[in-house]
Amino acid sequence: MAVGSDGVGGDTVKVRVWDRPTRVFHWALVAAVAGSWYTGENGPTDWHERFGLAILALLAFRLLWGFVGGRTARFADFVRGPASALRYLRETLAGRHPLHLGHNPLGGWSVLALLAALAVQAGMGLFGTDEILYEGPLYGLVSEGTAIRLTGWHYQFFNVVLALAAIHVTAVLAYALLLKTDLVRPMITGWKKLPAEQAPEHIARTPAWIALVLFAGCAVAAWAITLVG
Image (cartoon, rainbow, N blue to C red; front, top):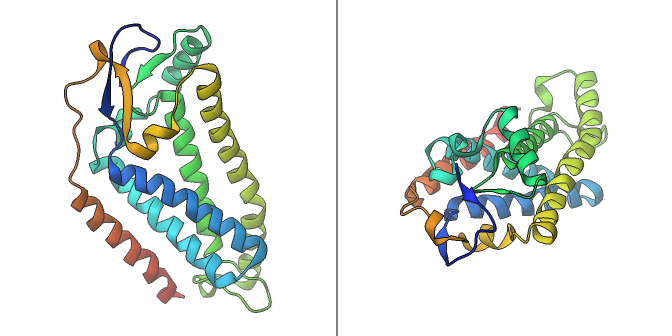
């Protein structure tokens, strides 16, 4: 939800915009993707599988948290139609830079694209094989030819994931250098500075224990995948 326009003079106040579960998810996903990339390039394959399952568990949690989490974590807060994203881009390029508590409409689409790409990437990896020793946890559910094709797509599609990640990082740097807006620190601390006259009195949050229960369920579900094949 837009709360005003950035760059307004006057006093500022610190508002806790991002809840802890969202922040932990964000950095845990970064670590899991990095670990998956490293083990995919250098091995061992068992750890590559573990990182892939961790990514799936995290993505499943984020999907649920997007409906029951705090205000800025909910998809309803930042997922808007293409027209809203284009309007935000036009106003930003015009120097008005509308201020949003959480993700802006354009950033919301970027988040969804990256999460969807990671889901596709990790999903294909479940059926993977190196045609020598390693077989993914769901390898036995498809034919050998299908598994080989999915493995090839798994390797190739990672370039899409890298491209989306690069766009994400570039946008963060552009905000810092061109718009003087730090997006990293709030995702670490949870706090964001807002003009006092535009800061909301309260941002609805969901108890952290609910996040723990949800993630535990997602982690068990991801582990259970290894028992299927």
